[in-house]
Image 1 (tube, rainbow, N blue to C red):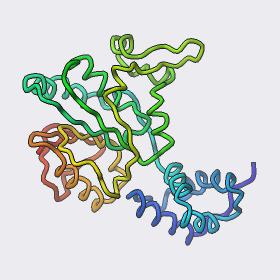
Image 2 (image 1 turned 90 degrees about the vertical axis):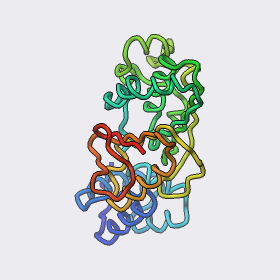
Image 3 (image 1 turned 90 degrees about the horizontal axis):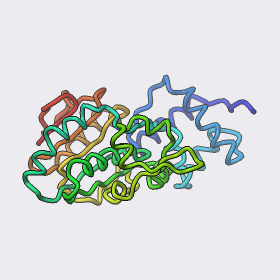
Length: 265
């Protein structure tokens, strides 16, 4: 395999500014080798010989700009990731929803390949099967959204699903070593591409918003902006969940902390 071309300081700076402007992601200088390695595959695909050529390309090619953001962002996720959040939903939030018996809306922001919204939908099917709850799941990456819509996962991925839920809501695909999420789970979820830095066409209100392990890549100004926008879309007693490695404590925003990484109006 050919070595990656040299990445000049000017080109790296331009890439950092572009990814921040487009996706809100603040890349530190320490990410230079990662950027160089990941974009090298795009240069090979496009038969370009320099990162300067690639920067000129993404200025006019929106599809390639999307590819650039895709390869430079992390899409790590799993079923039942940070399970304390789901325990809180089952023990505290769902009983209130069951008692009030009115339709609910959930937004999974930065849903990646779908494990988070499908986790929510499995729990809703198990605990509130007759309640009308719609889940909007959005991500910037078209690649991971395609995987999410397929709703098919390897055996290694579904190991994080509790055995009872796995038995009920995952269908083994013979000969493939994969599992298909059941229709009663997928039917609650709608996927859409959304750039959190752009316009949000949905109006809410949402009873629950999850934006977990997404804002960790953003600057304080961007996190403040997002927290304020999420708060504006929450219902009166709506809940926002963020990643346990994240915090809104130092930001100017209207939400109050009620549990670790859980905020409310």
